[in-house]
Image 1 (spheres, rainbow, N blue to C red):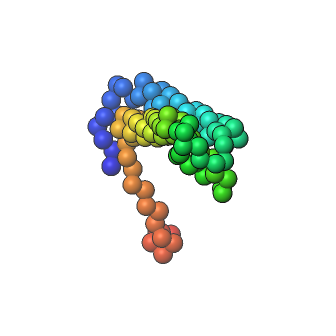
Image 2: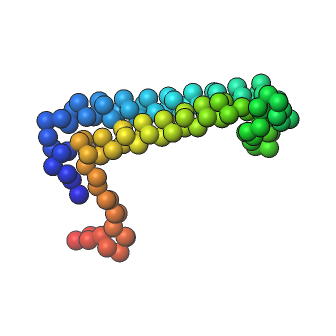
Image 3: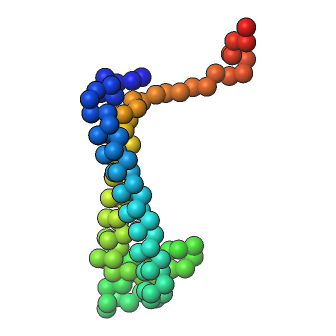
Length: 113
């Protein structure tokens, strides 16, 4: 199913915008991993209630404790990354390529004559 928006004059700018949104989302997602592993290597492994370090972060069994702000920062980065990538795919789907539901025919459905 192709939408009429995918045939319009905004096709090339939408291609650039969609690609930029997806690339920015991917970059933020990779930055999220950098922050995650920075916290994993530098935060205490025991909860310190007086310092507010009560939010666990589990990395394959290695648990460190974060403050509320650090935990919220990771959550915000995750939401921002997925939101930007989703917006980029939506822009490309609406304005550039259209949404196609491709179903490959089964081998017995192919006409060979």
